[in-house]
Length: 413
Image (tube, rainbow, N blue to C red; front, side):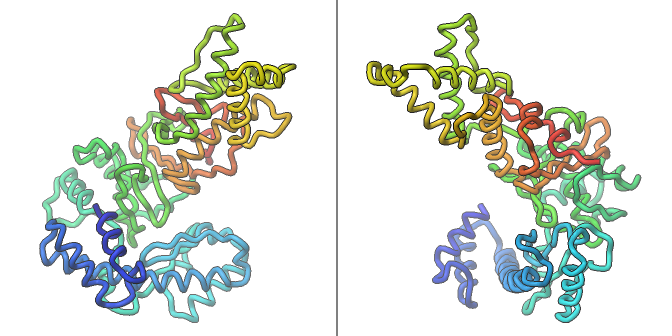
């Protein structure tokens, strides 16, 4: 609903984004037409939007300045939020760049946590006009209410603060005993919703209620990740072991990839008619061995002598060879490719399509074990680091869902 309101608002603006005071009155009109908010809530929303867009202008300017500093490199990674810039892996960057950032922040009187030994550097952007309280700092009223209820608090009681600082990074998240206790209490909470999994509220509390908070946003719905924590997208899981295969979700929306697999398995089924192998492979359940066997059959058919004559005499063979050519082109398979390379190309395509939706490359999968939800491990998705052998050994399709051994692909520590 929020996306629809923003789209409707910006569609009515001359520039496609707010540039003058009257643009926010258009937002007020759009909100009023929804008949969902009180006048006070509409006023607060409009003020918040003004603060966010004003902060955005400063964020873009400062982010651009930092990218131009000496030692920044050709492709440094920055994650911008409404009122913060987060430089990932800051403490692993060159001394030249770190000193340049420190000098820039000092010269421009910009607050940050540069004095701490955190992996990332968080830069707080000062809003030039308006009340800084209007800038969205994360949080979810629904999750907050659920936390109070689960902890036995009154609706107006403050939510307990997290005692320690936890950086979102790959590896185990070792909790202070007090924090671990609250994480265990909150773990079952799902607001009676089928789209909220166990552990999501725990992770939300663990980062949003640090001091200072790491801005945590509830993104539930559609193909969105569960949370966004300090600019990084996060999927939350609750499997009994960090080392077992964990479902990444269904892949039914990837129509072109499904078509590629259908072509491959269709050719395999056809060639099996002339062999003792009568196995029929399913689009909903297969593994790397099935893909390798299917590519072996495809290569045998593709290299058969006299195929040009077959294509001329029998239209069905022309259709089949056209499909083989299309499959190799879609998967970028060059002459001389192996069946293993073909299988890896199919699996890589599925895996990348799914990961890019949620949590996204360089996003995180956080698993809390049901036996002890304070046993937490974060996997950082790094698609470029996955080699063919590791991927084929640790990714499978079961019940039309992609299942992945995250520990084998991304585990650290």
